[in-house]
Length: 169
Image (cartoon, rainbow, N blue to C red):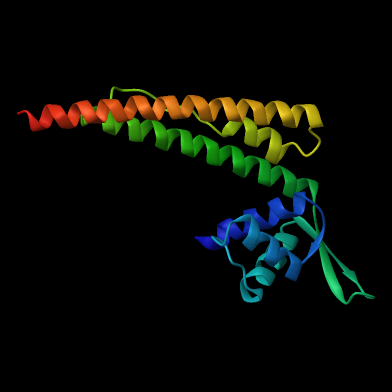
């Protein structure tokens, strides 16, 4: 499973600028908070595969004795589509999860709103977003997290009511 995520991590890291393999391993590890810890044995075959698919381009820098990788337009598009598929999947799972909780009468049937999708689309996918657009995305994200906290409190109250109901029967 990590290999698929490693491909996406490589594409994401390269949207920030060209990198050589060792620096890529460090940044992916930092960016994923250690969830993905690439090794040379995993990264270099992944880079070779991405290069053969035309998603990245490697350029040998003789004076540095390093190969530096750049993301291609095709790579950017594949990354965008993967992120969009992720949000569709996450939304489906979220709806399914809350329907199951409603069927168990733990909560009212409701859909937890996507908190991060709009902000991520600006902050992660739109490298050309202006400073103002990024600030606006972060402000909206902050507001969505506030609403999420209210939503979680409401669910917690409903779960507490259901627990009391079950205890009294």
